[in-house]
Image 1 (tube, one colour):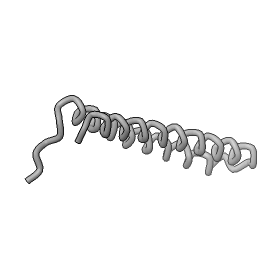
Image 2: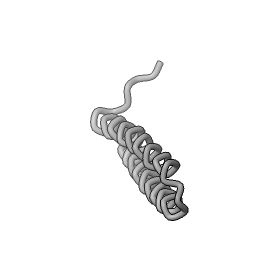
Image 3: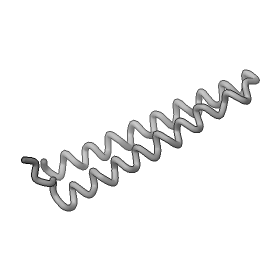
Length: 73
């Protein structure tokens, strides 16, 4: 694959991570304002998971962009 493909995948991953963070923050604020303090931790924990997976994917994409795609046989 070309460098542009890996760069596009990294960019799309960052965009989706930002959207997930904004959505989770909105849900968190809604739950806090509704008085459901115990439930409000769920969106924050899920964002931490999304960020961990997203940054791992970006690291893999950037590695493939820099080193080239491994041969598949």
